[in-house]
Image: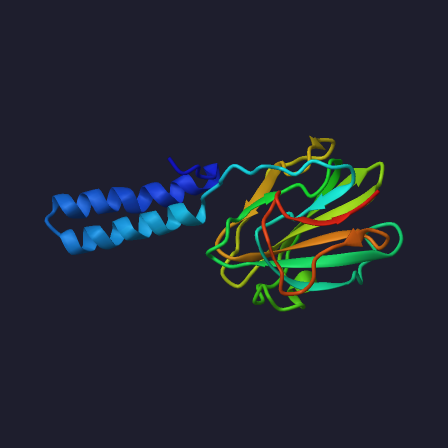
Length: 208
């Protein structure tokens, strides 16, 4: 059976029940449409197991998707200069987010905002987002879970003080979104704009 993120079951059961009711009423076409919807939603909320790479100082992608930006981070939340790596998640990508580095959750901060298209660079600062600050001996990292035009529900599974392993599940964003990873400027990044990455699998750089 395909693993499903726990946040998705409420969205899957509803069309399944509707499909059964419609079928019992003799409306086979409508029942089939509801069943197809349930399958599509289940695919969106899939949560496959991942073989997490091992290695000292490896930075992993926090999400599946396409790298849309690698640039100097304009914010001042981290100590010193930092680099921002932005990943756009389409509705076809796995939406479970993962820890990019072994670290302790320093703090979690929710920021309300707009709902621009997630691939637009302005979305990083303007859109509704959840900031997860991570502290490791090698330095500070920041993961931004950013809502998009369709995705308007951010799920965060971690709390301050929680110790995370690289690749551990930290939350998800429903129905299309963006995840920004901010790392110290001295980190050596190995991906560029246009690259496809997988959360918890793709090594995007190193911080030693």
